[in-house]
Each structure stands twice: as structure tokens, then as C-alpha cells.
Image (tube, rainbow, N blue to C red):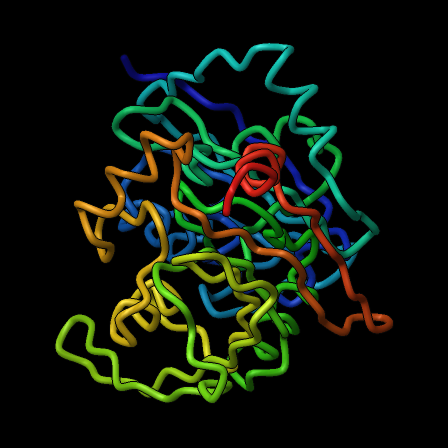
Length: 296
């Protein structure tokens, strides 16, 4: 079903200042081809302060952008329960005008997918509808719990992205791995390949506690590669317990019988600098904490 959308004027606030016009329009105009967005700009139907502009024009605070009328397919908005909205509000660890740090539960996707009508980002955009931007800075695997960062302004998004590129944004994790960790392994570098591209992955390891046949570790990511901790631990022959992809099936089966119903990986803290340095900690989730109480 096609829907006719009326023309509107949008006053640019601090959250979108510095963004390219074409990128801003694509965040505002949904469910039409990208080529049509560029056609609206090229034909002068989109204007900044009543003037024609190029797709690459950077918008500024207090600019008035005219979005012309357009036809688009109807967007089906999933129904998000009040319970889920309240749980999401309760999961916010820290928030200011620039950023949100959220305590993501395990089995909670950050984006909507084929099996889910909505994800974390959709709920946050609903409950923070007064914010001009809600952008996910990085991802956590669906089964990983803990700290995840959401930017509320374009400037904070760019600053934090640069901190990730320069390895200045610090992320620590807690994981329970198979076997007794060698105390001499405090830092390790491995080459990881993804999509035919090989990159160096560097992780620092600190033993929190040795159990009979497993080890609780704190992992400090020096670099941030896809599945870095999971791959790194597996390469070192200490896979994370109940990791279905990189772990050991027979060992995972034993731990599941003993009550570990998910991968034991938790993002325990993030450290970054915006207006000032922030170090946000996230306590171990209740299910993992409960498992450790009976673990030997």
C-alpha cells in the first residue's frame, strides 16, 4: 500500500548539525528508493533555507530543510509492549545529552531481524523520541549481555567512532572459559580473517578466578574485531563456555545440564571521553551471577 506524505519543514538541531543533506534525508524519508531521494535534491524540491543545495551540503544548527511531498510504501510499525518499554528504561546505565549506555540483556537483538519485529534501537527511538538522533555506536552479539553505547548527536557519534578507530575507547568483558588459563598469557596477538581481509587482533587477559576445570577472565580489548574474544579464546584452546559457534559441543552440553543456558560473555565496562572522561560499569547479569554461586 502506498502512502502520500505531505511536505514539511524541519529545523536542524545540534544532534544533526554537520551531517550531509543526503544522509539526513535518508534518515527522514523512509521506504523509497535511494535514487528517488537524490532526484528530489537534484530537481530542487529539497531546499535549505529556501535555497537549492547539493547532496554533499553540510546542514547546520537552525537551518530549515524543506522535505517535499513524496509517496512511499506503508511502514508497518511493530507493537512494542509497555513491559518492554519499561524494561528498556530500567536498563539505561547512564545518559546525558550526548550518549546513552545501556545494559543489554542476553537474547536481546540490537536491530530488528527476520524473527523479531523490533530491536533495542527501535525501542530507544520510541522512548527517546525527543532526541534528534539515536545511533548505535557498536554491536554486541545477541547472546552477549552488558554495556552497549548509543550516540544521541552526530558530533558524539563521530567522536566515539574515531576513538574506536584509534583504539582509545576502552571495553572490558568478563567470560568463563574452558580449562585452566596459563597465568603467563596476559596479552595475545592473533591474525583474524573476515571477508578475505586479515587484521591483527590484540586482547589482554586477567585471571579473576580459577575453578576446577574452568577460568573466569577479564578481557580488555585493545582492538575491536568481529567476534574477537570468542575467536581469540578458541584459538588459545580455552573457548568460552556455551559458545555454540566457537566452543566445544561436548563440554557445552555438560554445562547446559548444570544450568548455564547461554554463552558466558558479558560486557562489564566502557570508558570514553566526550565532554569529560566517562567510565561506566555494568554488573554481571543475574543469570551468570547465579551460575557462579554454585560453580566449582
